[in-house]
Image 1 (cartoon, rainbow, N blue to C red):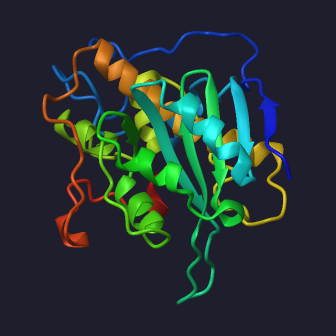
Image 2: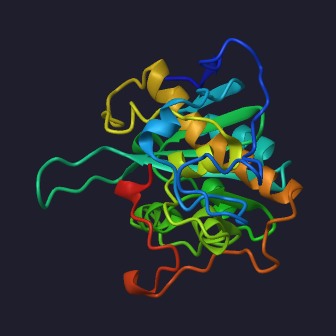
Length: 253
């Protein structure tokens, strides 16, 4: 199967800009006075926020011959949104390998189907490159899953949950952080679908692209607001107990 280029539209008809939470918006549940961000937002509050989804071009990479061009494009950007997807497990003791690796710029998202491609060396090299930042949430589980495919040294990663924790946010899943930082709601309906099916459908592609892209958008928001710490590069812990974020991949929403 050749690379599929999918043009998508956001769930919202207009191109409204992201809304950041104002310092004085004290009516938001969980917001402490004199604190910029709430510790968490309730599900009911998040449901009232506008839905946003990636509206750029999605490249679904399923053949080795398409990997080089994708990597060349991604290497033009200093910061990328990052995420992975794995087929969900509903039976105890059964685990699956990472099926999909997503890397996104502001306008293009590349979805690498690792269950078709394996783990190409060029992609591994990008994940080891300290000069290109890869931004995500709960990246410990993502990286550990990928290391089952290739024993690489992850470098240049940024954990948004760690940054959010330093800002006083307690619930640091992707959906909650998108609501707090950007004032938007992202859908998680496709999270528990089968990522190893022969063909990924458009809803899965949009979901996967959005998860990586929204991480990039949150990083850019924090950068504009001068909220990024000086020492922001995530370090791979030696054991699970050493994880600084404490975020579990299965609870990253």
